[in-house]
Length: 334
Image (tube, rainbow, N blue to C red; front, side):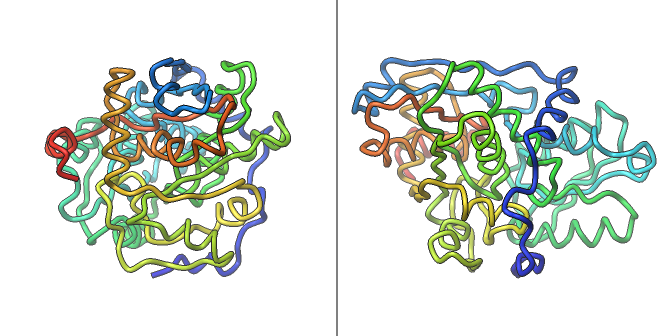
């Protein structure tokens, strides 16, 4: 079912640069700045005299940018809220982020995942001491379970998108990219719930006015893309993509208005294009990423004419690719 709060959408700019700066200060003692690197062979593959600045978010302790979101959320809780624990829903990366942050801060965490979720990601969540609760056929149904458990246990609900602290955590990544690059002409970001995009839009609005931010979503889970095109929220019946990190079936109230107002363009990429991007990234950079982590490169390939001659920031947002999917990617079975 659609997020009921979408009917009363948040203001277009739900967080500020000052709040992102505060989140960055809270995270500084827990996370290192991830590398931003250039790869001439990758530039040549994209073509059009485009210069890609690649942000290696898969180098974080949990293998994903979402550790920024999880730590930002947990470090903003009061001592009393931490004592009551935290609950969230995830297909893996945000769940690992909350589990990791909870382990650092001594907080009990329950992560709701879909039935049949990636077993390697489930194991990673448990390895940080969190409880894994399997319920629902996809992320959206697991999210309903998480809300129910949070209410019954009196725990903090760490929604993966609809939290200002989650968005400010994601925004710290864009600040780093602008500092490390010395300036960009465009940013290309992946969208599942939209924290990465809204964080980037907020930072660009304040630090680089006029910097276009382009978004991409998996074609098999295109609810937010479709809603952006229609200029109203809509849902999809299924989230059909191997890129579970962006497999959502609805837009979210705290991010949708910002996406509507701020994005320069929004495209979709097929699973075949994501698999090709994984192979391209591995071949030219020797980095292994998951489907969601390849969205930026797949989108840059699709937007190559628009990005011609530009300095473009792209994000390898996650590297938690399980071995079964890796085998299918390498065998060109997707």
